Length: 409
Image 1 (cartoon, helix red, strand yellow):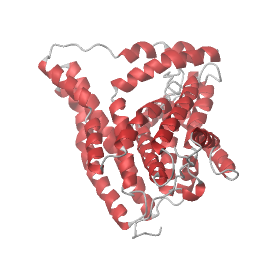
Image 2 (spheres, one colour; image 1 turned 30 degrees about the vertical axis):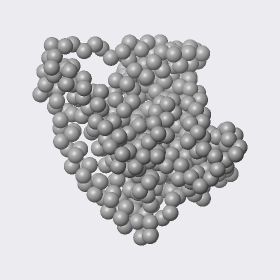
Image 3 (tube, rainbow, N blue to C red; image 1 turned 90 degrees about the vertical axis):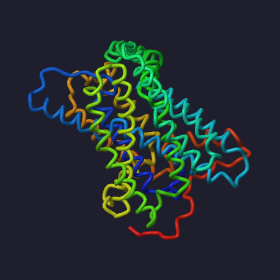
Image 4 (cartoon, rainbow, N blue to C red; image 1 turned 90 degrees about the horizontal axis):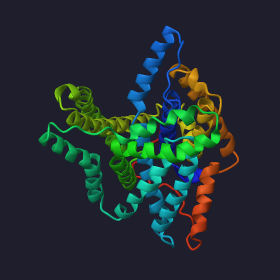
């Protein structure tokens, strides 16, 4: 998410952001926006197609698309901080105010879709403020520490020392069990009430149980470091950097994937194996997310994505608007208060619906950006941020200085 103007944008970042939003849209669609329901009476061939699409999209994007989004959130924070350094006013206070506005957007989005991530970005984004003054090395150490999932590793040590211990069921399960009533119901009021109370508690517990509380700030910090080093500009050093990162993370993904899928068979104690599986799974998601980012950057630098980059970049420029629009349109399509399509659609149909929604949003973005510099919600976010502190002009989200060795696509 960014509040920059068209003239000051980094196309690779916008395209990556658009790629992440598209992946999130497709995942949300095949999940019926967190309403897991398998319709009956589907033909056998479609059941096979549904399983293949479900497994493929989850393998590629689950836990990774949100990670790319978080990475770019930290990157944008750096751009705004860097742009504001020589201007009057306190940008860190402004950024906290921006996070509060983002929290309000998240609450609105949560009225429609309980799985909203904006509220957590707004809360966890506070971690960027204290680390923004630290050295690269210190920030990297903190990020690595968070990625190691220290709480889960401590629990694993405890479970190893107490093999007879039986872990309690995840608290989120009790809340998720209640969601079907209001997601399938025909009352929009009950949906909003259920999402804001029961749904938020379900997602809060799930976020904690799956290590996202530690993982997300780490992604923010790594994105900030990538900004400090100028890694999204076209240059020979950056091309080599992303190629090395791609090779390293591909090599890491292989053992992590193997361990993730087999650790339950190697360790009989369920509490210990489940905890270690969570740790390995978050490392796998991080490594594969970096594979996607570095692979995308390499192809971009080579000019291999010339046909799709403008489309994704246009889509990514209105990421906040598109994310909330997805929730409103998607839940209306699938939930009981709207068209109730959860009853009839498996992953195959949902993938087609998701692609239709993408192209609808893309052409809306093209039309809107032909008349305005920002998306509608991006504009509201920016104007609300400016109004908080009239002493300081809004920092322009712009590119830091290009490296001297620039490559032309």
